[in-house]
Length: 313
Image (cartoon, rainbow, N blue to C red):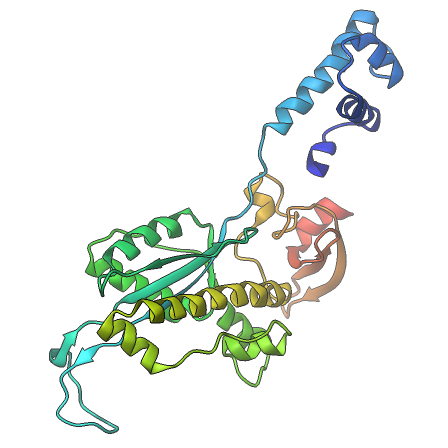
């Protein structure tokens, strides 16, 4: 509503608020007099001006603000079943020794701003339907977010997609919380469990370890599958909490302001155009950029010196 309010003068907005609170008064001339709408016009002009303000408001209300669709997700995969003559370390296992390829047991995901965590699971070792459905979900997202998804989860999904002849997008915008942790901090461990506990969000769910995988992969145990799904869904919830904390020290991958048709100087996180200068950085060749903080959501982001001067001074 604040974004819509910016499109009206103070007296025009008071007219709108009065209509919203007290119901529309069809005597537009009286409304124009009450809120000093177009005082230089005649009666008909003032009546029309007040009515036009209300029409403009209704049209703007029909325009939905675009919010970046951020998708938090995590996958759990099976192991390869292979032929092996012995056990121990440093074994030489060749691709020809694979009896059954690893696959995706389940994928859990949630949309930013929603409470529900969804899960897709394989059918007795067949992940083709799971992958087909989740590839469609991924296509809806403006940004994928997960822990170690760039190196593992997304690539594994693409591998299973090509295996099952499922066409996926050639590129996905993603934010990997593991990369955020490594880039900006020096945690004792960059594992999700440690970071979540360190930041006060609690721990991952405990599970039985490899016996849980054995029960699912070898015995199709429904209880163990439910155990794994609970574990995976908790990871998604923790990832969202960790992301929201870490991203305040990093940079957004999707510019919320530009997505809504605003200028580059608007906040990438919430789209607000009001900001406060935090620090000026000058490079060795003499170019400068500004670190600013959004007055609304407190997100920090960079502006070029030209963009800053054009919109702030």
